[in-house]
Structures are given as structure tokens and as C-alpha cells.
Image (cartoon, rainbow, N blue to C red; front, side, top):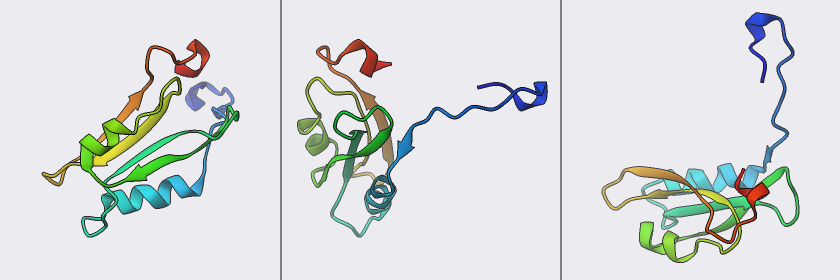
Length: 100
């Protein structure tokens, strides 16, 4: 990204977060909804489209049990205290290019 104050062209990362991610995140943020976590990652073999990998109940424990193997992901969780956490996760078997 080039700083627009320098007169350079501002470039996009090219990542496309699909609307379903925002919809599920709104549900996680809603205290009245049973969905308490969201895990998102690249859609199939796409290098640009981010979609929901899984969502569910169970708070941070349920989220941890559903983290994908060999796949980088991002997500968020509503804790029992009412606070929210977000994360990036990539296990040791995740390809280096995906980790970046």
C-alpha cells in the first residue's frame, strides 16, 4: 500500500470477504443468538475469497475443537463474560504461503 499523501496509487490486497462472514459475525455479536463463534478462511482453493468454514455454539471451547488442520483461518468468539475475542490460527502443517 502506498500512502496517498505521497501521491502514490493505493492498492487493494485483492481479498474478497464474502457477505456470509459479516452475517455470521453479526450473529456472534448478538447476545440473544446461540451462535457464539465463527471460523473463516479461504474458500476451497481460492486465494482471494474468504468464507465461513464453521460456526457454532460452545464458546471458546467449541471454537477450539473445530479449528481446521493444515489450513489458515481467522475467527472470533463471544465469551461467557460477554466480551469478544478475534484470532488468526495456522497449525504447524499449514503451508507457508497460506500462513502469510
